[in-house]
Amino acid sequence: MTNAQGDASLLLTAEGARIEIALDVAAAPRTLNDLLACLPRRIDLHCAKIAGDQILWPVPVLQPLESARDIHGTPPGAFIYYPKRQFLEIMYGPLQEETASVTFLGQVKGDMAPVRRLGERVQAEHGWQTIWAELTIGPGAGWREAIAKAAGQPAKTPPASQALDEARRARKAMWQAPPAEIERLRARRGVMLPFGPLVFAESETRKLHENLWLLRERGDARLVAESGALLIRGAANQLSDFLGLHDSARALTAMAGALDDAGASRAILDEAILFVGRMSHWLDLYFPWQKLNALAEAAASGRRNP
Image 1 (cartoon, rainbow, N blue to C red):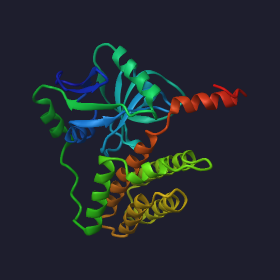
Image 2 (cartoon, one colour):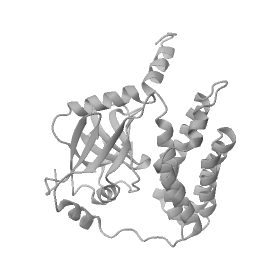
Image 3 (cartoon, rainbow, N blue to C red):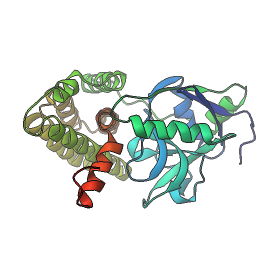
Image 4 (spheres, rainbow, N blue to C red):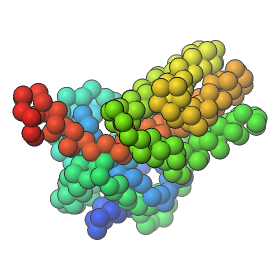
């Protein structure tokens, strides 16, 4: 590990487990600097659906890949950041078929058994109940200042505008709690209700989130304004007309309109990414993935009962 400050660490506490994560100060100072700025934080834990044994949780960090690594080159216990989903992740077992580049942030210290027990509980309880945790900054002095210095100057603040202020308010509200209209969607009953709208809402928001990240990586202001508005409006129409998530759709539509302001288009795009990404994360919590996978496996095998 290239970290010269041996006490640089985070603490993850959940379900009686206290997991210490040693940070690699030199590996990704910009990402770590932004992460530290939003801690301490109460976080909702998610399980991976494709990659394998990982504990995931969302954070409002918008750094691109930093000292990128192939995810298959990271060992169990690796603490990583996956930009395109705003997820921090701890790996506690072998990976399956997935191709991804990630930012390496550090390594779990000590015994991996508590991480594995926590990960298995998250897998089992996902969709039935939310497993909450606390992520805090570990003790020690000096290393936080070293990270801030290595991160360099922060990005320039875009000019204030009513549209940007409204986008920020919508994003902050989305990160505070799931929208009430998602609970209304879950309460719907009928043919394939609530599962049909719920699964398509998660899919719609996830794909918009990932596509806006791809657009962000291009960086061209005109492309951001034109393509971003098109992507956002298309998804907002689906969320409103097809899935009944009218409030979230209105917030997104307002962001799409604000992208016409070339001076603020990048800032608006970032707010849209954080808004729709968090919406996708909330929706993800309502799926009992382990049970759904067992049903899919049984159906693929021609069995009626898993």
